[in-house]
Image 1 (cartoon, rainbow, N blue to C red):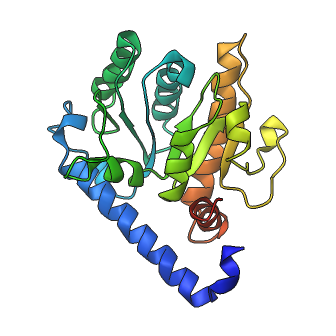
Image 2: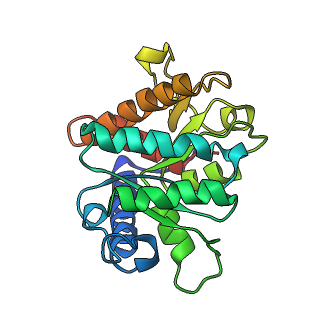
Amino acid sequence: SMFDVHTEEELKEFMNIVKEKKQKSKRIMAGDRPEFWPASGGRSVYMANNSFVTGLISRIAEQKGIDYIATFVRRVLSSGRYPEAVFLFAGYGELDLMDCLSQLIYEFPGRVGYNNSWLSDTDPSGIYFHAHRALDCFISPSKFEPFGIGVLKALCLGAVCMVSDKQGHKSTVRTIGIKELGINEEPDANGARFPTDDWNFENTINNMMSAFDRLYTLWKNKEADPSWSKMVENSLFSD
């Protein structure tokens, strides 16, 4: 594997650079992109501080499971159990789903950022990369996913991925263990895969909550437990 050519020291240096760049992108997204934060004076103090940023940059379509996201975000942020959780979304698509995301901005000022336009990777401001790189966790609850290109982009920018267990995700995201869901850890985990229940919305949301809780907890304990850093490392070196 790629790791064989690195000394532990070099790897540690590299991971520190990754961490600093992520922090820088969070600061840029939190302070210099007012279009994401219309309900909190054009910025997010939550994201600028110690934050666990979960998000999705994608076409806003039902196929992508966007209808799950609003309920899930609401559940996470109103639970009070995840004080550092912040959400970041970008993308254009189905109007009713875009409205659902826009509503969250005003319901949770500074905790949910959303820009309902297409981010271009040629935009000279670098917005495309900063938005992706600010994410600790890329979420993709797709109902149908032949091949998740969004996940590949997120992984190579050092985000851990929380995805539905649809076919296209199985080849890219190796899951950590999620006890409540009876899911065993896979080697070189770079995210969490949760089952979706096409007939029962509530079951899917509960599964998402279990996966999120597990990832947030690992992130929260990252100083004491190396599991989170190891997952980020696995994301970056995913092949």
